[in-house]
Image: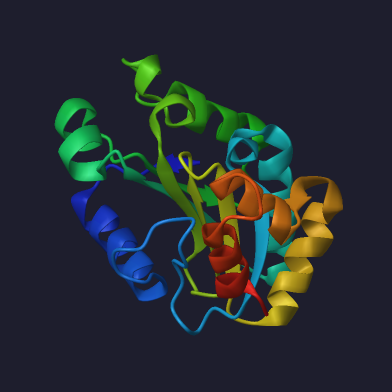
Length: 195
């Protein structure tokens, strides 16, 4: 696990995320560009669990990723995290990193302000590969995370690694994001992410 502390690294991360994102949208609206074609849904709070990290490592190994990133977009990495802590709210994880490294990353950084750790403060964040094959944005307000895949076979590998006990059916993700399924916004989410 490597905290991102150089401005060039955070600019590269932000540029990479721009290539995978619909500008200005945030969950539960569709946040992926057209090259992302299949999806899996998770509860936002699950993104900070040891089990989530272990499964993400398993998925990356199945997918042939050498590493992946975790980056926050709210609070702002430059205007908040760097300004106050000289840290960008972002990490690079290698496949040999341990769950303890991940738990430390989301709980113990910035070191001098535990209340600003990602687990408490990050309202929007992204896990993503550097090769553009997948992206997993999460939104605390929407209470969901949506993993998008450039190829359905990558989505199948994700489902193998995560299994049904951690994944949400799209109807439940819509209920997390909007409340009861009879509201128009729930139907909108279902339509946006339907295969």
